[in-house]
Length: 112
Length: 109
Image 1 (spheres, each protein chain N blue to C red):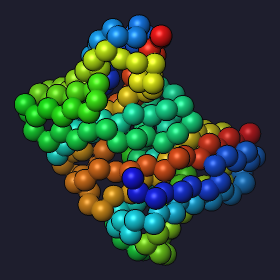
Image 2: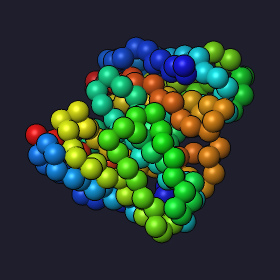
Image 3: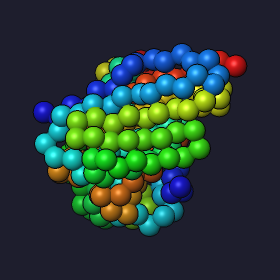
Image 4: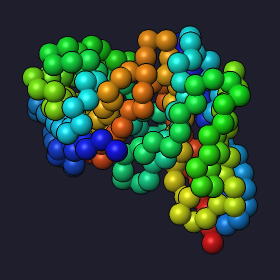
């Protein structure tokens, strides 16, 4: 498995505050992804990166931005958190988009 | 629109009682189908990848099969430690994963 860590693992915040989640990988994988997981839904892609400084939108990107300044780090930012962004967020990485994506342990975010 | 549907949503089994999980899909193009296992509070853990109809993969008590419209995950003689949510995901033509909502399996001793 890829060495993937996410921080923080749990966070409670208030509506309107900015929040940044971090994904760190030690596998030198080029591709990194942010998903959210909600009850009754499958994992849904928020944003992904195909290299340093190269990112693109996924299915549910509204209200989120990302940045990747180093191969190993992929940041997800909620500029102004809303209650609808309460969710569990997972980071995934892979060396090739055809290959298996390996997932981190997740961050549980609650927006009050 | 790409759709991946898993059934049933939940499955309760007695230890040793074999069963199958279904993953049906309608997507623009299939580049691969992935099965993951997810335990409560953890990230998905990779199980299998299938690339073409007729392909099968096995690992311990699990066997995954693929047709042109669906995939099955067969659990043979399950044990309590097989209790988890099983996720199916399809890699589409644009090389993005579309996930089903999962099947939660509970195996009682």
